[in-house]
Image (cartoon, rainbow, N blue to C red; front, side):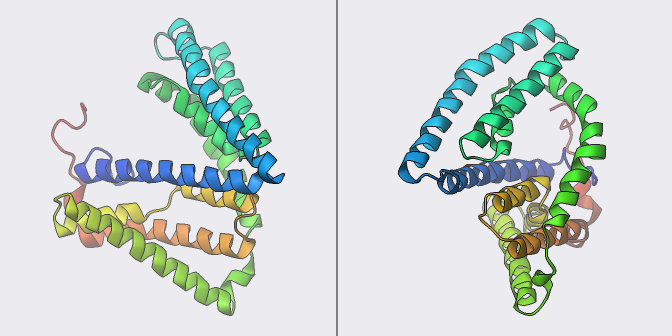
Length: 261
């Protein structure tokens, strides 16, 4: 977005690929967290599994048509009223509480609730306008502060430093080469392919949330969390220079008609 590439061919390719990768990552993480968080052996696993299936049915068969009606009734122009905004927040918090009770992380419930809402760009724009400032100014600093409190200096000393370098190399090579080869197979030139790999190499907020969920669930320890956090920051900072190196400003050109699309 900062480079103005969201409406370019490469930008749309990278965003679509990242969205698909995030969906698979969330599904895999949910399965692992369910196995770990069931707690009571086979009985707990059955409770988590059946409860998750029941929640999916309830969300998409019950909440989706309900909120579709509410949006048509109380937000025909796409601008939600105060009551409807409160109903959206209650739905998100309620789904989060249910997934937490099932042994999953609360973030999965919020994700499911967002996925069940009817797609409306006007509503999305209004929600971003009303909530983005609060999230950026208040919630994100708290999240990053909590993430920082969970880091440890052990990741930077002795064997930890070698492991950190290994994580960095594996993450960079895997994402850059993987993204480049995928784009090349799809018919892009080598320069555009490596630029796509550079875009895929950036780890955003979603990856940080996934790492925090893994830490809270006990899947990873503070040392590995610190290494992954450093990896996410380093690879994100690398994206701008890598794009300049691989493509220069010629990759920032918006395709004709893409603004309308």
